[in-house]
Image (cartoon, rainbow, N blue to C red; front, side, top):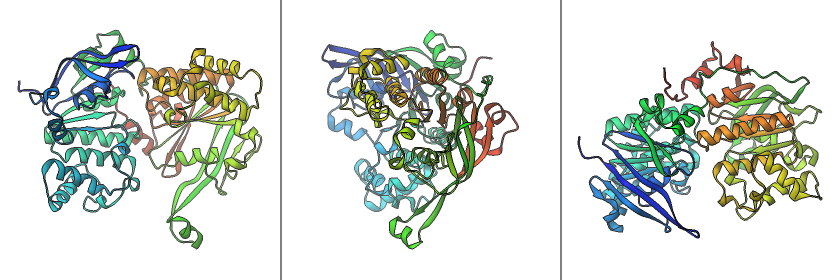
Length: 541
């Protein structure tokens, strides 16, 4: 066999901490050949991303290669000078991250960002660099490749942003492409398009790919071989079909068992008696693009975000809202929360209070307490300078007007989300992703709400942590008779977790009903398209 593009030989990586040096990766060996895609899977903290950063020589100052060698095209990366490694990064070695906006400058047109790579790594003049940028846009199948480069990142969709980042990675003619959770935040149809693109690029350009993900379905779709990491060690490696259908290690079996599957039987939960907790009737929302002057003058372009949407969420049940980016899911959530308002149609609570015309600042505290939100990324809602106890205690004071045993209430809420009392004194940076999301859930239920809106609450979590968070939501819902509005692009999770489903396409509800109805053939054509786009993990016959 030819020399691998990337070879890790008994690699160990250590971090210096106040308690001493700690091994984050221990004795890892793997190879990636030209035209081959190798996946790395495992839960948060298993060492997947540390391996990627070590290959790119992006380890932080307190990290070091503690043993072994990392070879790129036969060269020891840690024997190269800083200048030599800089010439490789973005050129022969490139990396694509989970969040495309972390790689894109918001104030520079897309074309110029790609041209900079060509000029830096390939020495091209402006005309040649622009031609190569346009060709890269064409390679990743972006619309209007000759003109899309004049736009800024905020003027294109999330899926298009990720394609731009892949195009940027290709500008230096790499032989190795490292992808760290590149499709996590994307809906299933956009994700399917990105995975298809990666498979095509690998075959056409002969790229070696190291694909890091917690989504075993995407790994099964795009990778030839897979390595399973647990606490910094590779516990199982092999062809994807073998590892997923005949797992040898107990941890691999647990990971696979945690994945909700479209083939799992649908378990109906009995519908509670009584009227809906929230009812949506003929709801519409129109935005005007073009700024305040356009709105005042009656000009601008009108965009219909929601159009005559009707459905209901019953007390104690979970209503899932699914659809691709731009379908109107987030607009509905904003109206529920009072971030947006609309006079067209109604969103009303069971006591008749109309949410759709009342902004959050106009709502009484009693209504604010009844609706709470759990977001996709808890880091964006947890203040890094405040303790967990403060974060959970704040809604107790503001919305429940608790003045007594706040610390005792915080302890009870921590227990409700399966965390011990000492977590109250910790800060967000001291928590794992799953722990942060548990804190966010504890804070959401602190005001004793009737309705919790969960917007992609498990999208950034690995499958084992996702399973625990979902079970936690189930338990809390049962104990408190919560109504959950669950916004997600993960159809397999929705199928296993929700009671009712509303499928939204271009602002309209195209499919609605109990899970058993929506997910049982014959499907609505758009629902069928979404289901068909879900990446599947092969299972043993």
